[in-house]
Image (cartoon, rainbow, N blue to C red):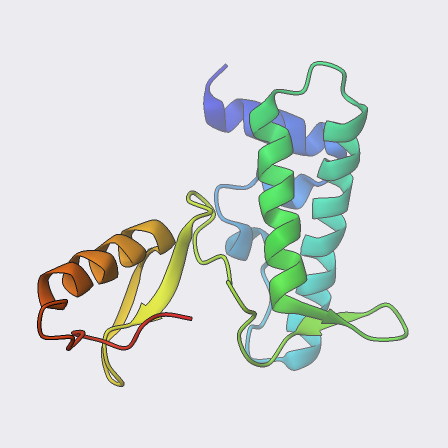
Length: 149
């Protein structure tokens, strides 16, 4: 059984058949211009996440990668969604502090080199670049860019 077949089998076992398709967007098959349909699709995806989380939590031989994937999905859910008092979810306006931008790499972040130039990178890398630039310019005490907070 290949990876795709295994993923589909686990999705079906979790009761989250929508995740068994090769494309989540295609599996949802909604009118993306209709706000009510988008809201319904968000509910379907969140329900699938919880069904998979329950399967992973109750499965004694679940690999660590499965738990890590559920944790990443929950982190993205927490940073990008807001819950209404009635329990319905909607996309949050604005950007969460230290927003996770990559499912594959938890340490990647957005940044700016200037007002118009956006970059994606790593905190440690950005810190090292700033430190190196500061060391080279320390004699003149003129940093290349403002010190990060």
